[in-house]
Amino acid sequence: MQAQKGLQYPKWFLASNNYLREKWRWKTVRRLKNIILMLEWAPGAPSITEGVPMQQALQAALRACELDGAHQSLEEHQAKGLLECLHLSTAGPPMASVPGDLASISYMLERSAPVCPSQPGRYFCLVSLFEAEHLRALLHARPAFRLGIALRAPTVFEGQALDTSADFVAGPAYQVFAAEHLCRFANSEASFNARELCAVDLCLANSSHDERHAWWEQVKRCRRRPQGRPVPTLPVAALLIPPEVRHKARLDSAVAKVKATLRRRRMSARQLFGQRAGRGGLYLSTADLTELLQTLGLSDPIEAGRLALAASRLGGGEHAGVAGDFMNWGGGPATVSLAGFLKLMGSVPIAGGELEDEEAAAIEIPTSPGECTQETAMKLDAGRWSMRLVAHTKFAPVWSSVRVPGHEARPFCIWRAEVRETGLQKGFRNLTGMKSSVKQFVLGDIGVRGLDAPARGLVLQIKAAQNPPRGKGLNLSLDGWIARFLPRPVAYRLVWHDRRGITSKGGADAGEGLYVWRPVPPSEAFVAVGAVCTTDPAEPRGVEVRCVPKTWLVRGDTLGPALWSLGERQEVRVQDSLMGVIAVPTDNLRYVPSWSFMADRFYTGT
Image (cartoon, helix red, strand yellow):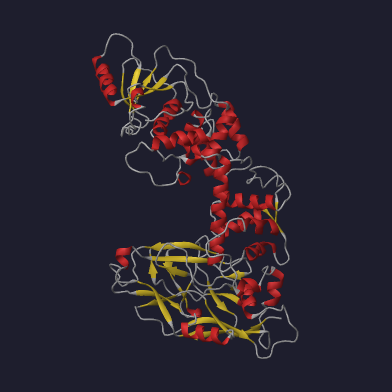
């Protein structure tokens, strides 16, 4: 090991001279031992027990659980995580339930003092394997004089002593836990959970993150095998990188994730914001934006809350100056302006640039519910746009049960209508500069008993009416009207999956299966009438499925029998009124509704 500046470890954490001999420093770089052995030594009578200041312990637990700045309500799993980091239990009296906020946890800490206890007169010392062998021989010899020692192997017997002397008296469990994971940190290990991070962070409180990082990197270089993963991606980064740097990296990562999802779904950030604010809406509350981001795929409310708060600060929203207050929805929620949200989305570039297609340019802010009801009203005589449910005969296979054991007698497959233009059609249109006057969209995938493609299925067709009403209406092109009133799903939620199916000869080896997804409409004014299926756990891409206004539909009772089943609430049933479109379960999986269009040919648009 080369000479370097040491860290300020606790005074009770030591290392034997033989563990790393001083004379090695100037001669060579030594690799670390593959096994860690530690001596716990209590030389005298049990000493007094000291604790960590309550606020210091709570802040360390918040950092370890990635809840920095939270000071209002907590979800149950968040509260349990904090209690575990602080070595507090909710089992039995006096704590009958999990606390719901930080004030309750602080009260528990006051009643449980000392917090994270340790005994200054109890020492933990790293020893060499040679020393450990002699110490164990001494233990078995049972000398007449006092020893008060325990030999531990933290990476082998975590929390348990390898051997103890007859007069050994155990100390605080937290101190043993912290010492064992300090050994792992000293050995440049990178994998730590939140509870372990909290303990090590408290023990190294007198050393800055930069000092820890430099020391840890120097030790890591002593390993024989190269360590290729960058530090920011490792769990140990919480101990090595300052919180503000980690928060910036997390925020940039979340922004990039949102932008990539928007681009994949051919949406703009302005469109996303307007889904909740309505046309002309310039402000949202942080709670509304958090919920909106969660529908986009940010399932973690903390991650979505950080984005909402960051957008509020950039836009100068109300109450936006409270540092880290991403969970404070109760005492005066912050407001997020459209300008602040767009500025946040523009702070992180993504590969391929921003979305600039015609559909995004045709619409700046999605419609409000009232305007949607008026514009999408069904008319049987005349309207600006002609809507039809047309039969389609061209399909592409999605999934087949041909190689699923035990189902040879009842084969089943899933198909998807092909509505995309062929290369020749698109090339001719680009050459002539003509825009497509007819659009067709998929309502959902089609389930069929047997292995043959369906004879026909239904797709939704829209085109400009021959005799539109006078005036310009909303002054939208066909693409702009579709983007606003036949929107794409904002997300896909996995309902259930069956890994037994394949799609090709090599599918079984690749582990492909059946994944059933529920398209999530942008608002309650729209409905996704059919499910979308894939053969891998990735979210569906490139599917021309659209959500339709709820005013066009009526609940039906046209569900066929289950064509494929894994048990209760995990089955494929089709809607006969939609020519075999797979019914999509509700979000809570309580029932599977069927839908029917009120008319198969009608007009809409003002």
